[in-house]
Length: 96
Image 1 (tube, rainbow, N blue to C red):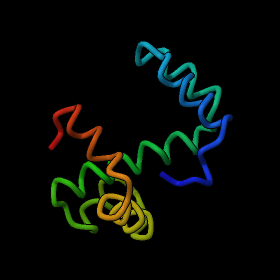
Image 2: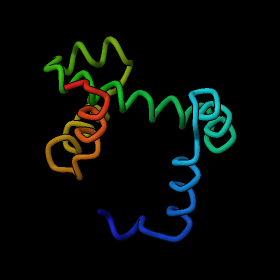
Image 3: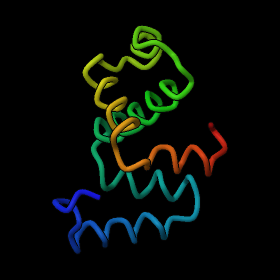
């Protein structure tokens, strides 16, 4: 875990996220918290991670998601050397 982001404010944000109970509640909350571009960027990274786990090529991922190769590379680095957050979620959602 990155000690730079471990703050009381981030804890409060995560507690708020954990209190959400539906997709509609997520839309309401995240539309208030994030800009449209921030939310689209987060969802794009998640899609990139799924596609990387499916062994798609950078070119396929870039074409389907519009992500830059720099973004794809960053997500790939997180998958390989990060905190296993993507893998935890993929396992819980049975996406592996």
